[in-house]
Image 1 (cartoon, rainbow, N blue to C red):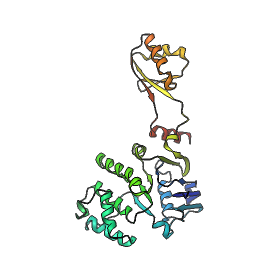
Image 2: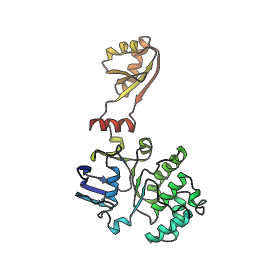
Image 3: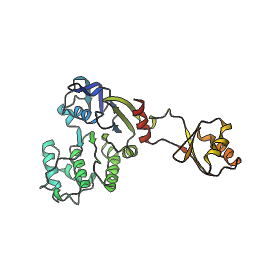
Image 4: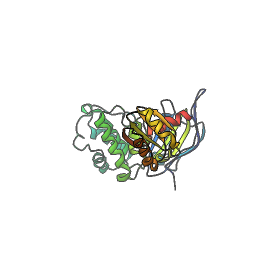
Length: 297
């Protein structure tokens, strides 16, 4: 299987600072891969290396089986890096036509991408009249010209309101099914990445910290149950004979125990007269697992 993105020891330095430090990427085709890291982690530099905008000082890299910047690689890549560069005095359709001609895409591609991003009604309006959400969707349409097999998106929801973020999320989810494209998505909106991505790449201080399915991140964590009770001190005393580690945080008791221990825990609490209002399994969200990973690093 040819990987959509592959690198070994990818390294880029700026003076004495190493922005990307020996990164090994393996992005499977047809996936939505979230690319995460705190500010300054090396995400934008990595994307610049993948697009051939910067040159690596060590290591190797392939994009769609070709070196970055190779004409055959660029022909298969669409990119949206933060806010798209648009001609405000032209219409959305005229902006698309300019890029279509540069990419050598057929005229029919205009209708295809406008339909994909749901901008058929607004295509003939001047871009200066567009909302931020519409500008981002037009940027996605520009990236989709030429039917690329890899979309590299850097903060595509940056600055959008909740409605615009939701529209962008739905669009990103649809694209692999409707176009077959692989999506490499860099974002600081962890909750959004959690809702669209199946795979994750996490870098911190230029180094790879995690790569693989999102479901496997934090898979080794101890299972916990959360309990909300009337008297936490009495509840802890009632749970002591069970031998389960218990901690108190956020107005709840956190019990280190698997889900099949829930009936025994509930019986112990009720049996000792504790008022039990809630007992639920706890699954750490992406933000919690991401922060824990950075703390380990």
